[in-house]
Length: 229
Image (cartoon, rainbow, N blue to C red; front, side, top):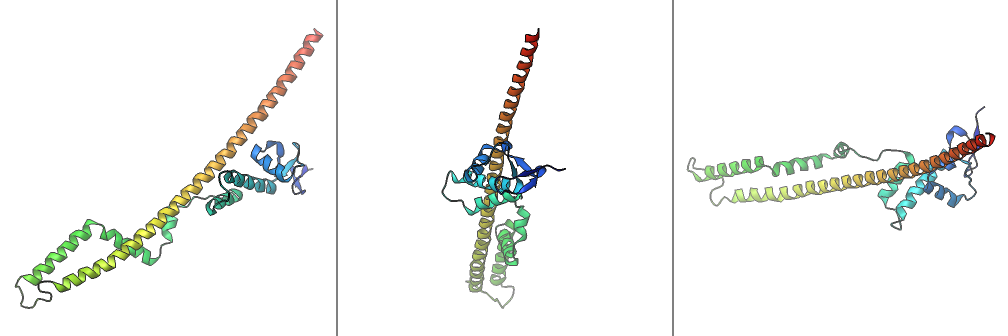
């Protein structure tokens, strides 16, 4: 027959294998549970649902120590901790969400800031000026002072500048998204490491108590043996 335990928080009967001993919880979790349910004893067992709720509240309380309200990023981190989900986002996932216009603006900005653009642009200018200056033909479509060339250059500059700015704004947004993702990953890691430290401290204290009890039992046995002799 499977042993069962009654959770002191939700008062539901659960199989013992699906519960956690209250004495095995960290100090922060026990404080969070004691705040809402004072009538909890060392021999009680907590169900997994109540354990996750107390764990989430404990993380939130740790973050609220330095500020009044949680930010949206910190709430996301706490939610992923509660759901036991990963929070890291691959850079390829960010790039997959680009629209056609954003991809074109990136290509234009990449080409406009390269030596290929500078050399090809200089080549076109030289050919344009030579063709309209040297008397190879009698008909020059843009003779000196090259009014059409100035108009073309003005149009290119007027179109290229906002396209490059669009690409820069999008890259800034992507960098901001990456920095937010890094912040959430670091925050989640910090909370998990802090929880692990609390668990390790609790296990060490429990082992120390066990060792002390074992040592006392050994001393009692030795004393009984000495009394018999």
